[in-house]
Image (cartoon, rainbow, N blue to C red; front, side, top):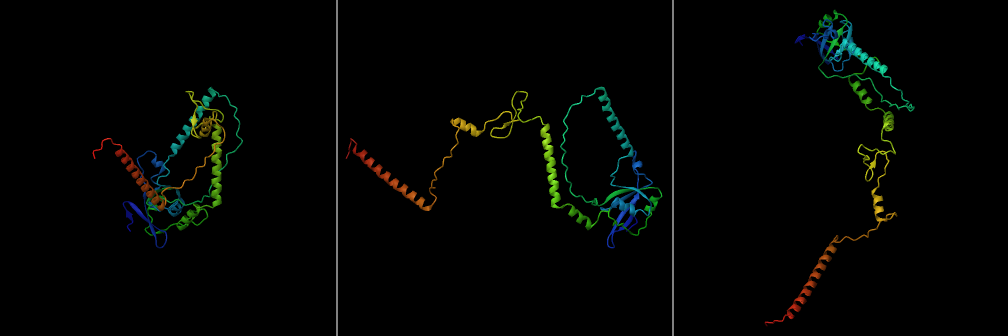
Length: 319
């Protein structure tokens, strides 16, 4: 493996005896944007490429501890806000807060007497959360800022011999490797009683907010809402709908049908006589065909008698 690749120094990292990871480092080259040198000092910043996906800030600090004291680590330019921007934003917020105070002094508002709501909103029982390691995509970059300028040349002049990756085994460190996925599996499957408590508390909070919104709503029960044109607002529900607020009742279909018959008694259900299905069985079809044939013969004989009577009633008899 060459020691320099496209201007980057190759720094091998040994995870285990069988696996070796290669880290590419070089001095940070500042951009032409104003203020970039304040965020990333050029003489104290080390640019890292192909950072391990499970690497944490603490592990990188321990790994480069032999070169010097590390001030901070920035992964993929996560922190790009300059200190000056925070100060300006704070000053703008102060000006915006001072402006309403002047308006209130010129036009003091009248205080309204509002009844205090003594009921407290229910709190949601949180699910158990475990401190898991953040996994990033492979091949990502990072910026490592040293406390002094002497540490940067030491980091660049590191030998080509693989250096062991620090393994944190204290209680505060997040697990890595297979232990990370085992802890993630258990974190995604909390106990059922905890899930039930979380769901019940969430439903209680939703019902509380829903009841509170109904109290503040302009649609109150017993008062019909009329629009600007004088029509009563009606919503979906019931047979023909219902008015908003419940001020006007709407007749149902059963009431209309009962009033139309002129009687207010109970509607009696008429029992329908059960009829046997015709032509369901084979013998029924045969009997039906036989009956039709007999009726046809009978009508044929009747027609013959009628024809003979017509012949006999003729006045002209040629033979």
